[in-house]
Image 1 (cartoon, rainbow, N blue to C red):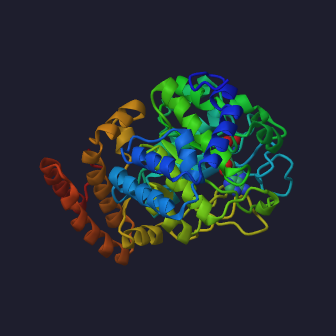
Image 2: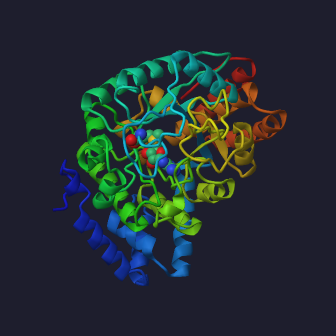
Length: 472
Ligand code: SAM
């Protein structure tokens, strides 16, 4: 039976409840009165439950859909201003014992290059990332207890945090590794990770079992209950997501929101981020082999509806998406994007060719970080390299309550501007720097607290004079 408080996957992601929700959403997709009521509730900016949000997703009345997009954009601006947080993935090992049918790392793929970085190679990768200007990474690995044990991941995190190259430093390491034990999550917490990210891939249990036919990931409950174990292990920032294209998107959407509701109900804090990956071509993988691919318009509607349903949850889009899709997605709710990404193991130091391919998927946005930063600013955004919340202990429910009271805004804009200034001084091309300095001088007046504004202006000058790493 559906129970968001239950610790059992089949109860908090309950198939009957999802099917009822989809039937309800379908029955009401032309119900203008109900849809307007739900939009009215969403305007209070306190979010929606999975049923209400599913009705908005199903809504096929064009004028009301326009209202949904407009509201998503407004909520995005209210909560995140013009800021877009920047990150890069770092693939450290692609050894994998699982059989995930959509992923080129699956164990039966004998022609993909298998690689695992040594600590020396990690140093080189991280130095290359620091030279681009990155401050925030997401570690990515396949699942292999022998070739990629937790101790290797922990050692790699220590290595990454230890590298201080010129003015560079990785200040937040997020981790996207397979579901693991409470003990291992505790070790990750102690190693100082930011967010623990784990995509559900699909919430549809029957499909999940078929899509993960072999290996430890086959265990649907163990995978679905992983965030609870992570939270039990002390990690309070977790990142959810599904791989769109595997199952019916409406099913995934309801499941994703039910997962968020479960985490909020049980742990008092929902997911810190939601990612929206779509399945991509990769070595051995043809995305057309999957029947549930979604077009760009559907994808954007999903993003808008997630934005409305969980306003406090950051939303991430990767370079799986093209420049033009990313541009539209940013308007509707995305708050965090990657730039200059390589999805191969060791790819920042040595780009690969077709004969030596360890990549997880093809990227659709091949621009450099500098090009992405410049493009964002030309669109009116403030690229942010901020990692302050996590470093100041503003995580989990502390972070959420500051968000909910609006107090977080006193920190976010000045931190974004100060970290952007660091980027401009240390890494930007002359063109990007010129545009960036203009953006900073325009945006600084948007810091409403006068004392904070004064301090931020002083620190911006300090950064110009060579000092680094200020934060509120
Ligand atoms: N191995 C880990 C696990 O078991 O969750 C996670 C890391 S994996 C490196 C990161 C994510 O890439 C996966 O969770 C999956 O959603 C996504 N992915 C795998 N194959 C993909 C493909 N062909 N296209 C797009 N994304 C893919």
